[in-house]
Picture 1 (tube, rainbow, N blue to C red):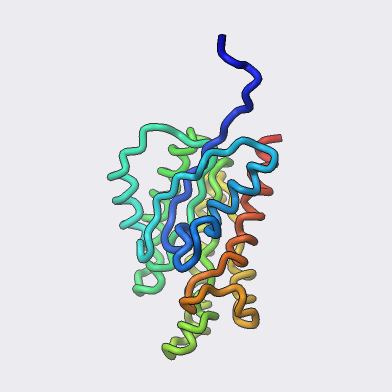
Picture 2 (cartoon, rainbow, N blue to C red; picture 1 turned 120 degrees about the vertical axis):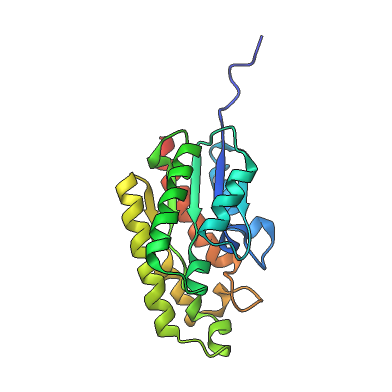
Amino acid sequence: MPNSTLPRSYSYLALGDSYTIGESVAYDECFPAQTTALLSINKNFETPRIIAKTGWTTDELATNIKQQNIRNTFDFVSLLIGVNNQYRGRDTANYRKEFSQLLDTAIKCANNKPSHVMVLSIPDWGVTPFALNSGRDRTQIAKEINWFNSISKWVAEQRGAIFIEITAHSRKAAADASLIAQDGLHPSGKMYEFWAQQLANIILTKLK
């Protein structure tokens, strides 16, 4: 007979770009891995499935999700995308359209439970040494990041998804080098730890 005392196992899908895979940090330091590590203290969480790659824009993420041909659903899904749209100078109207489609896909992957989808705001890469050393207009970057985040927040709220604001925390890197990875551009494991704590706290409230 099957063992009915075995704890329920939970699944998590993370969709995004370099911020999701944890460019320039070890796997166990990326925020999806840190999130499940925190959750696994009290719950049984599977290794997160990650569909993300450095440099991906909204359309590139959408294309690769389709190529993955996902057949199963997940208990929780996170979505963090858009920094490369901003970096490449793409317009916000295009972002609104493609982000909306991606969020609809994420909700379907979460078994049509919008409240089990967490949208993370785009961090501000304008505070990094990379931006400073390359002579970028840091004020303009911050302004554009805010525009993109206002769109993703509005779309998330319209769909009933959870929006997690981590941009303000990312800007602390301007005065705290420990929040930046060795490449001078991407977040460190320490910054990802903050994101993971926000995610884990929200997921735990859903599991009560």
